[in-house]
Length: 91
Image 1 (cartoon, rainbow, N blue to C red):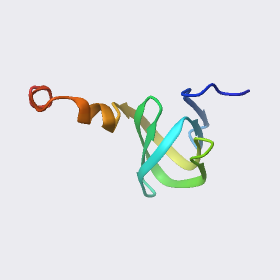
Image 2: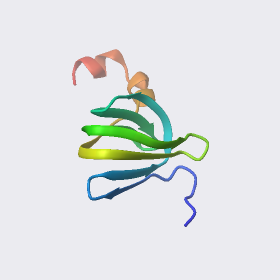
Image 3: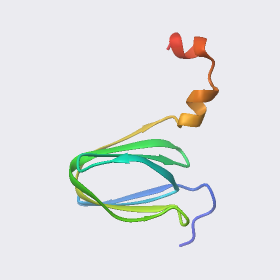
Image 4: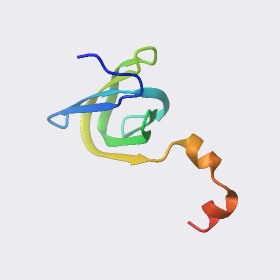
């Protein structure tokens, strides 16, 4: 199944394997946390023994193995930069 440009998909199997499409950039990673930018915002993965099995920024794909405990989205860093300082202070 072909993805259209700008689509984002997350497929998790038994909280031990994760396949993500629409990945633009990996900001940081270690065995407990992976922070990446996707087409739909920043995604923060948390868990134990996390390991990046495969990363292809050309194909916008990421595969992760390990014990996955949470997935959390936030707005993209570019959108945050676009907000005025007053809006961020009053948040």
